[in-house]
Length: 317
Ligand code: UDP
Image 1 (cartoon, rainbow, N blue to C red):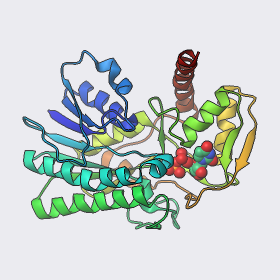
Image 2 (image 1 turned 90 degrees about the vertical axis):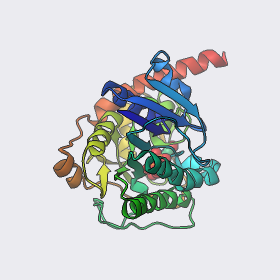
Image 3 (image 1 turned 45 degrees about the vertical axis):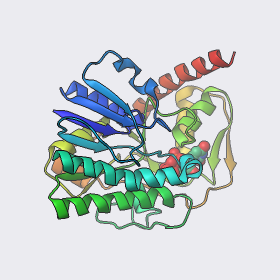
């Protein structure tokens, strides 16, 4: 098997690359390194089955040779990225997805769209089943990501219906773990970094908003199972471990043995108030069940960020 992973130098993309190589695939990574990093692939430097192409998928994609799977994982994914790279986010999810679909069509590959719980916006239904159409502000600060991913899902179905392309759609809920960017602004790196450095943990708003935090290894297992399945409707991948952000801040303080205090900053615009997946589809169709608890995942993630922070302070010194 030979797979193309767009965004393969990113947090989730690079973990998918590891899994595909372990399953015996040859892998071509396409990444423009805006938010991805070659550090995430450094352990594969001598892997002859891995090919790296530095390329922006908002330009047409050419890959020589056969391709069995196209995993479309490229996109900046942190709310801070939505502010910093709004057009690039829309291009990656929009025209980038179009080009990745074009590649899959030309090569007669199976195509996976990496989508997101953001398609549900600020959901009025909880937990969120795949049949829920969402509550998205089309012109708000998160719209660049939410609408691009919704457009990407629509494009995926259009290629399936118009060209008979073999496709699937995964909707990822909040996922964390090693290889997240230390400074990407998301809650996991922010709180862990703040706790390790003895700085206050910054909660946006009153902290009553919820997220369900899934571990990367469980998510990648779901991705792999979905790729092998014949299922074409969207599938949620995430955990039932729903916590308020205040509870999560306390969990990080405890797990790091930190003395940091918790402070409140102004709430951010259009911050979804609740997020928890209905994972009936993943469980019944893929036989998938997340295995790693929030506490276990946090331990490994904290260990990873400790190393990153000490390297950063060596460089700063
Ligand atoms: N958040 C926070 N403090 C931070 C970073 C994030 O309170 O330093 C909150 C944010 O307002 C949101 C939740 O944590 O309610 C998750 O934010 P994140 O940026 O990780 O991703 P999102 O799930 O919103 O896409």
